[in-house]
Image (cartoon, rainbow, N blue to C red; front, top):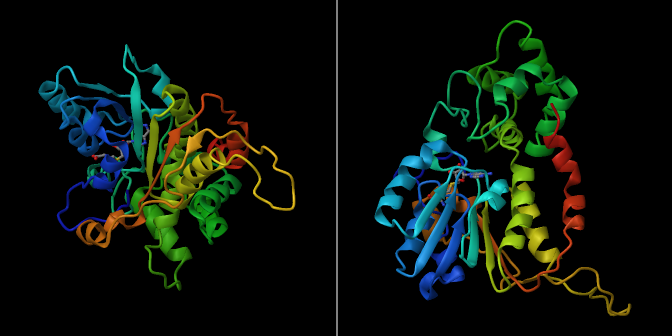
Length: 331
Ligand SMILES: C[S@@+](CC[C@H](N)C(=O)[O-])C[C@H]1O[C@@H](n2cnc3c(N)ncnc32)[C@H](O)[C@@H]1O
């Protein structure tokens, strides 16, 4: 989710109707909601009386929401305060999983919670931890060396001024601890004469959030674990918000759903196993109506695949995004 506030200033579950029509919970089954958040997806699915939800979220602030659903649907809802890369730690008992869903990013409640410091409008100590993190943005900005800072801003934020910003951070932190408002000011000073549509700090903040929450390895590991968890015929559906996430999700489904090389000049060669059936080659996007009602949804993309085989070797998937995972490992 994006840091912009929608018209009603509350969290809207993005692409909800589209997601529901894909996973068809009308026929009953158990679904894993990997990003419980405000519970919008889970609650809608639980309206179907034959449905069960196993929900996960790394943010302990959502536990109170989860408890409400737990009381209402005693037998049909279970919540775990876990990262989705820990998907294999949940107890499935006899549940056969029909679908696993992800709504990546942040809820509006998280963005509005100034203690989390996810937004460049916040003040005070840098944080950006969603929950169950190893370190905060403060530790990165206070300790990471200049080259690595520049690399993080470039790779995860595509920030043109990554080197200059990193240099200024290292200079400034000699005098004082850099707070959120100081970082915004440093970036503003570097980009003084720039006229762009997005806020000067958007890219650097995106990069820091990705690093602090290890969004890349979280996504890669959880997609692979999801594949192992669902039976043939099960669905994995992912709503992504930024281009790096979408590149990973797109490759995962597309690469492993193509059976052979399609060139007419070469004999058919198996290039990868066919592990998914893709019903939609293109991502599903929010309608104009949804974007009007909830402007942050404009960057959402929904992709999904139906598992068709148990055998799938994801080494090419890991290899493809190895460089991003390496940058995420920098300190
Ligand atoms: C966009 S919100 C989900 C909103 C939800 N679909 C709804 O309808 O209310 C994303 C949620 O995913 C959680 N999240 C993000 N990354 C996660 C991860 N790696 N593991 C577990 N939860 C994660 C966030 O804490 C946040 O609550």
